[in-house]
Image 1 (tube, one colour):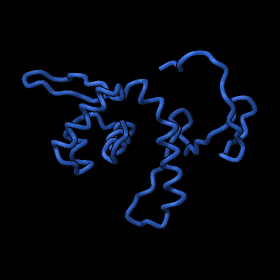
Image 2: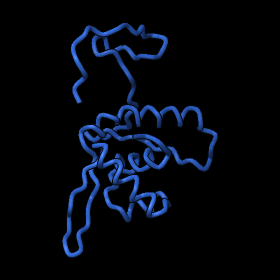
Image 3: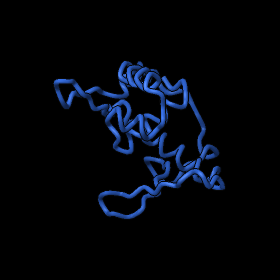
Length: 137
């Protein structure tokens, strides 16, 4: 599913509100055949939904599905990692995330659902989960 950089970049654009083929092509500078192929694959994988917004000729939006929206914490995590470890790259603009409810800059972090303490890899001990069948999709 995430076989190359274009897939992540297309999803990033979708998370930023870009829905149309032409906008994706312009923003990414991606070849049209590559974009068409990746969009078809993302639709097949259930990450994007193709929604017609105009007829004669048919034009489509590409909208994030619930499956893709569940990937948001990963995308934000990658963005935070890049801000921390690639900060010296002047060609890379830094983005600020604004929380719509309060209008303030957001600094999302991974936290324990029980005690709300921030989590790092050193704070976790993996153990086998009880047998309960496959995870919900």
